[in-house]
Length: 165
Image (tube, rainbow, N blue to C red; front, side, top):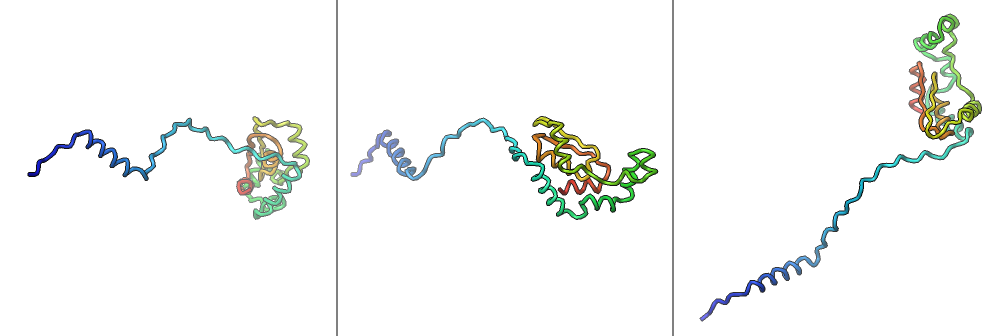
């Protein structure tokens, strides 16, 4: 009759290994995980410095796209509350003469000469009190290696134009 034979265990183990080897021949193993130090995000490099003429042309084009952003608009259309606030910042004379609110900013060449006189370096911050729409500060950032420019202005309408720019 039929006699049941026992298969040695080493044959069973070999068959299982062979089965999984054949089965896994088309399967790729996952690459070993590499542990790398987290890279410190590097700030984007500041674009190359522009000449004052290039910076001015760029800024003039930029401001031309913003409605009511010209110096002439500010001279004729300064809201009454802002006009009074700015005039009052000049003391009694400003209130009496009612002309402190008249807007102006240095010409681009004058700005360039002032900035060269300051000698702003890459660790410097430039502050402008009464910055208006911020043209001076924007020109400073484009033409000097200064890392930051901060403007302070009483007129909200002028600050809004600067923010748009």
